[in-house]
Length: 181
Ligand code: ZN
Image (cartoon, rainbow, N blue to C red; front, side, top):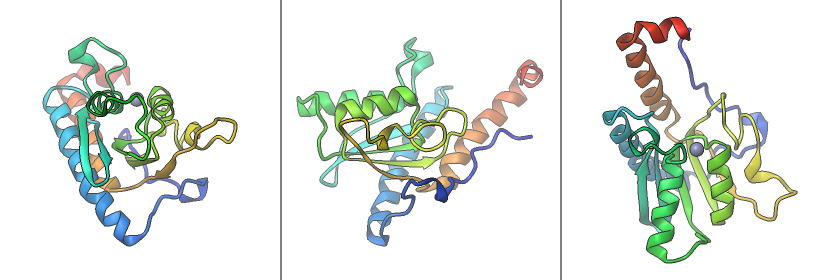
């Protein structure tokens, strides 16, 4: 069966849909994150893209680059947070929103908390490693001293399709990978 990124499950407590006006804006910025994801795919990286927004301005955007950078931490979110912090000359990104095409992993959820981002908007869930809704709920854990507003499922189909398309092509290109999986 195709490795899928299913629809986010609404009953799990993450407020997946925001107001209409907000979701229109969210789709626009997620579109930009998707462009970044395409950039990653063109570079042979798992296609995930991220954008940091502050007062309707794009402060940073980046895409997944762990392979080319020889850096396991070079996820789209980490690179975008680093760029935004550098630009703002501030290690806190208070009041800012991060848009990312895939539900963040444990490391990136940790970085989102460290950066004190106000809001996270993601595209599609990652049932294999998502740390915001699927596997863990790190951004809404009352034991931590910061919580983040979360919206998921924005441009979900496009965000999922770019990933499944990428892995489909990889399997066609490498019959050995087919056997391993
Ligand atoms: Zn990550």
